[in-house]
Image (cartoon, rainbow, N blue to C red; front, side, top):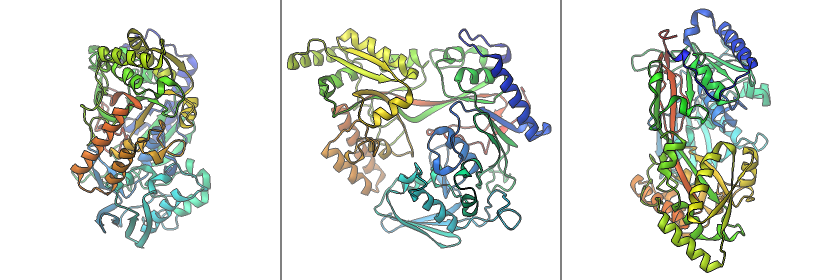
Length: 546
């Protein structure tokens, strides 16, 4: 049985952590009720949650929390298709620049003493007007303000009709509106709490806020008045509650999962990957009885980036950038360092699964070609021992050292510099790193989101173009794609742009990630999606195997 399988060679957990976990489990059980404990979905968030205000849902931990509490006009299903939410229908007109949303009239905010009638009230179009205006408020400084960059104006035509007008057509706009930034919030509650709305959230979602002890525990309760139903007409959600712990490291998290104290673990960490998976990415036999694993594409490209305005000769050289792209075998790296989880990035920057992806435009392992290019560089520059410094964080040190060893065989020295994640983020944004590790997770499922990293008007720190890549042809195609409403033609434009990036090689794509989720056998309906959104409204938990 899984509870007896705890053969962690390097795992060391203090008695203090066990005490904290036990206290937490007991308190969460009491806060929900002993009779309903089997209906509590328990998971750990090792990154903590910074805010439960959807206007600040930038990180995955915050997004997972706010996704249970709030709704927007539209939502994304597991196939990344835009579906109705508070808007039951919508029309797109005026050359795809005007969006008219028709709202449901039966959706209630969670109960709060500030609401006059029965401590709640129905959603109105004016609530969306207020909510989106919050994103534009410079004093609030929401990280989601960019979502409205292409919006000209928006307004409530009446209580049930909300209209958004764009400055120009933008095919991915509906996908943008599914982001948690665009959730509806009640004006009276937000104005009452001010900045403390972050810890006193009131929304319309399947679960309502109950209790939050920051960095210790979060408890959400079932919304008895939630508007969505399943295919058989039964009201969602099925669960009674959600209980979140905040153990700070993945080893501790996995141990709690192995002991049955939490129901779900997301992602694959080096501390336990060899314990649970084979090198082929399959569950080991001693876990198959008690654990389910689900995996699928993740819109996340892991890569190395060059700062194109660097004064370092090696970084300025297209040949050296191509040498590194050609000089290591990505598939081998995935097999041995990630136990087969992930897809070797032999295509461009656009990940597999998005229109525009093309696996013929990237680089495959070719040490012979790499040596030829390296020798050409040496002759042209009279640099006999070329060297590049790669800056990374400790979490990705094993990948960088693998590349370092492989390129050393060819004759290129790579010095690996490890710094804290916060430092790497700041230095990368300010152009102070010549060669750095990075990743890009889709904000919305459209390749334009990836290609925005190479548009010259998006230079960091004012945009996501961390490499400062600039190409006039790319810029022209990027702007043309905004106006193209035909999905096939737009996909062709995306591929052309991605190909231009790979020819210049300001980046080295490493792998396209996969979502991996481990659950106990008594959990049903969790599902999986390519943006790794945690959706718990259709999850069921039985008492079997508890």
